[in-house]
Length: 167
Image (cartoon, rainbow, N blue to C red; front, top):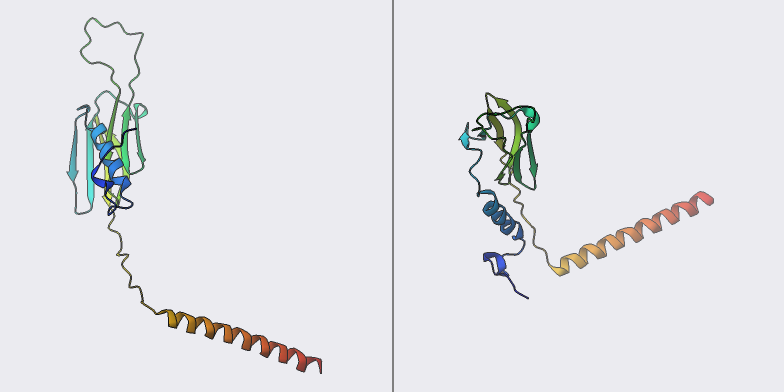
């Protein structure tokens, strides 16, 4: 049995397993250089990924997001009825992946003149910081006792009211 040591094996990094998985996906996705792409910053919160996919139609392309990973696939169909005297443009399949940070959402995709444009938006989350009140155990017991006293007082009042209604 062998164990793999990583940066996130420390007990101080609880719940960071998804970072390790993200690094593994990054290593796998950067291997092939096809198709070439650009990443542009359109505005403070908008990004665009442009892939050069000449020869592909909308039906040949698939864009999806799975577990914070943008995956673009291209599948060109072989045209068997053509006879080539020289074939320099090969029908090629590809898969290109981009790991998306938390807060990045895909807004849409369009194909224009052999360029696939994928529009992204950075959503800035609202601050989730909140103040946690610190109490004492005495306070809890006091609150619990108070609620028990209130419940018993209400029960006695409703019992007394029932007795008065009967008389």
